[in-house]
Image 1 (cartoon, rainbow, N blue to C red):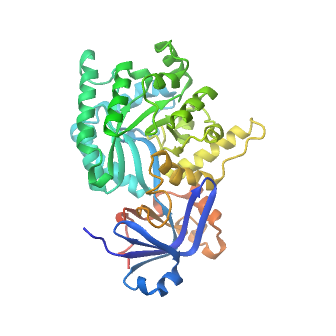
Image 2 (spheres, rainbow, N blue to C red):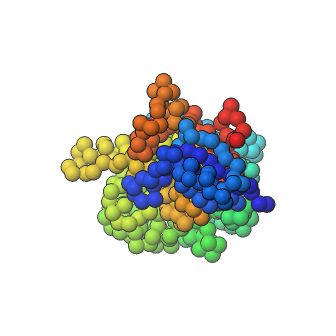
Image 3 (tube, rainbow, N blue to C red):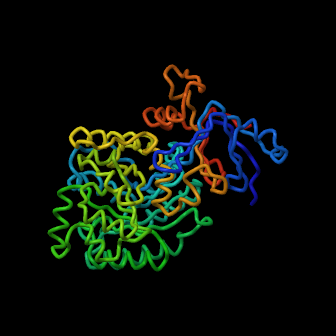
Length: 443
C-alpha cells in the first residue's frame, strides 16, 4: 500500500564514515513510500514546488538520526538484567539458563511484544537477536517482531552440550536442526525482507562439531545469517581449548566448521590474538562489540582499534541481559569508556570519540549486517529508519538553545544523557512504530 509523502523538520545528524559527522541544524528529511527521497535545509525544501504536497511534522526542537542498530541481544533474558555479579559461565548457569528455560508458552507470549516495544522506545530500529532453545520461543518472537514493525534478525538458540532443555541428549541435535530449518523456511525474508533468520549456535562450549557444521551449511543454503559468541571470557576460552584440542585457537574452531562467513556476527571478541583477527578479516565475518556487557561481567576490554584496523566491520550490541539495558546510547558511552580504560595503561592508544561510537551504532552496524546500502545514514534512496530525539529532555533544566550546539555537541549530549525519556518517535521504513505519550499527532 502506498504511503503518504511527509517531511520531518529538525536537526539532521548522521555519520557516514567512522568519525565523520554530518549535521544540518535547520534541516528536514522528506519520506515517500518508506524511503528517504530528499534532505536539505527546511526553508529551502519548503519553497520548492515539488514539495507542496508534503505533510510536514515540526520537530525543530529535536534531533533526527538514523535508527540505532543493536547487533547482539537476547530476547528471553531481558527480565534478568543487572542480576548477579559473577563471571560469564557461572552467571549463565545461575541466572540465565533458568530464565531461558522458562521462556516458552504463556511467558514468551507475554514478554515478546513488550521486548520489541522497549526496543522501539529506546530508538532501536534494527536488532539481531537470540531466542531460547525452544521453537515456540522463536515463533512467538517473530510474531511479535512482525507486529512491532521493527527490522529484526532472530534465531532459535542452538546448543547440544549441557543444554537446559528436557530432551534426551541424543535427540537434542536432530531436533534443534529440524526446528531451526523450519523456522528459517517460514520467516527468513518475511514482511518484504524486514524479518530475517539467523542460525544461532550459542558458542563452542555448548555446541558439537556436527551442530556448528550443520548450522553453517543451512545458513549458506538459505542465504541466512549466522550468529554466535567468541572469545568473551578467559575461562570460556580455556574450556574451548580443552574441548577442541586440535584447533589452533578459539576462532579456528569456527573456521574449521565453516562458521566464518560475510553473514556471520561474532559477539564480543574481547581476547582475540593477531592470528584470530586476521582470520576473521580474511573471512569477512563481522563483530558485535558489547562493551556494557563486558564491563558488567568483568570479561575484559576489547581491542577495538586492532579489529577496526584489520578492516573488520564492527557494530555495537546491548547483549541484554549481561548488558544491563537496551539503551544503545549507553552502549555507545560504554564503548568510549572501555577505550578510555585501555588508554590508561596502553601508551599512545587513541581514545574513541563520540562521533566514532555513534557511527558504530548506525552505519557501522548496518555494514556489519550487510545493510549499509539500505539503512544507517540519512541519504536519499535509503529506507526511512529514523529516530527523533527531544534535545530539551537531555539538557540541564530542560533549557539549551539549539543555536549554541554543534553537531558534535548534540551527539555527545545524546551519548552521555540519552535514553527512552528523550525518544519522541521511531520510524521503520517510514512507518511510525513508536510515539512518546503526550507528543500529540504529528502535524
